[in-house]
Length: 309
Image 1: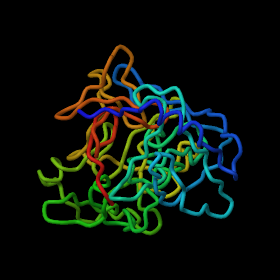
Image 2: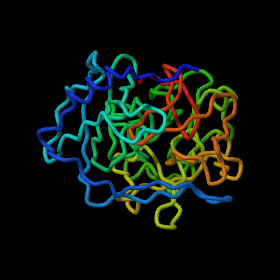
Image 3: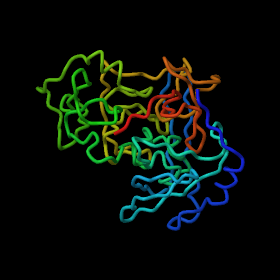
Image 4: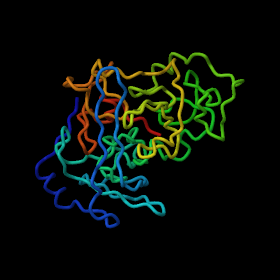
């Protein structure tokens, strides 16, 4: 396993050249916390308050490791705060940008784009470094999971189906996550089972199914939310499109077995390290750094490959 190593002189240089975003001034004080549930309960996440959701375009990391944003904030949005130091658990106190297929997106750019005090994959609304929105569960990538009805593996970095791939139609979900564009149709035909290739290859986080239906708990209320909802966030959890889990490819979270549930970064109480199947366990510090090998990132306590979009 490769571990992140920061040379002291480089860390000093990063501290010297770190700067605040001119649009934002001081970063917003965090009021968002994520705490692991115990026993058999689902993930518990407390949403942030008072923060303004923002998005950022793709960014390119400088050779010094300090990101330079190249995207343009939308009207009414602000640029997040760049962070190069903090109380790191595994990252040595310096944020290390994570690239996705040669590009650096909002969930890998070392910037708290939505000012909730959580950076990159330490932010519950960041699905992976291939995610360009920190303020919602949607990825924000053009064309990604945008078909109003037909769905494949939500976590494979593309929206194209293929031989042996996962396949589902939102018309078959009685909770209607397709909204007005794809309403529930009791006569719709959907596969009763997914292929073994789908089950084996779709990188499903603990607490989700392969089509992006994930369980979260906010203020004691449990929700099964559809990650494809472009406006779904912890701050507006009551407005998120609800969904029904696909039992054939649902990876139910088991905190009693030291699994980290969707939206969490720490193992459950009493567990020193997360439990993982066929991969290395990991922890994420408050700046999104982990001890995962290069080319991977920490998802629900386990190192998984960064899948390009």
